[in-house]
Length: 283
Ligand SMILES: [Zn+2]
Image (cartoon, rainbow, N blue to C red; front, side, top):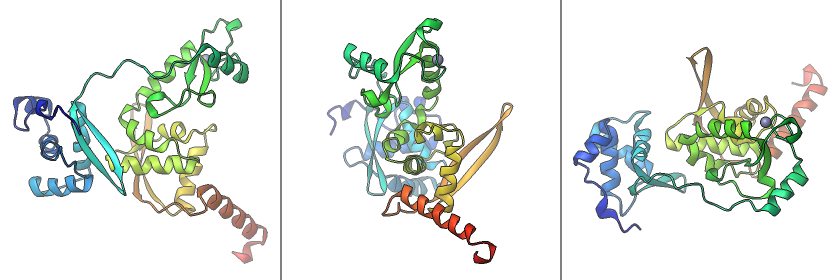
């Protein structure tokens, strides 16, 4: 519960008019404001939008999320739905705090992982200035522990920070996905959370959240989710600059198999090999 609810602007105030040019987003703010003491679910917002605006479309869930451009909205997963709580005005992100890397831990990282950049291999002898990097950023729930730390050169540390910053709209979805045990579950949960947040998953994010080391792996995981686990995932392709941008939308998912995704995929591959070995007549 928050004590500064009084400080939030009224839905019809000039501040809200000025903050959100989109009417649907102003309605989303109004709904969150009215329900700030009993925060609504996404399903309730969709119903409300249909009621007030006469329609809901693929962007409706995103409008609720757009309130975050100016306000802090806390989302919590409750059962299969999400609850959105209007907490207050958005404050500038606090300067990076969190546990510092102690000299002892730093020494341990260099001893165990080697004194070179884990992206380009450069060493101090090559003139590289090494820094200790969080493999999974702290803002995504990454820990300050040996497993989650590695040396990077200043150039790659900076480059990685910029690359990851481009994923900030997905931070909530990433946080829910990245701690899962296997890449199938990490990518699957990323797709699920993103669907609830009303966003599609850019292909570049899959290896990051999947924590994959080989370029082709995320494509295999998507295939497994579709073929082995029965999910429906739609790829949206569009031209952007000189390349093609691919985003994934989860259309239908299924519960994780009780034995786990890893085991289900292994069994599928084993049976496929056996069928293949038995020859074409057996298929
Ligand atoms: Zn490097």
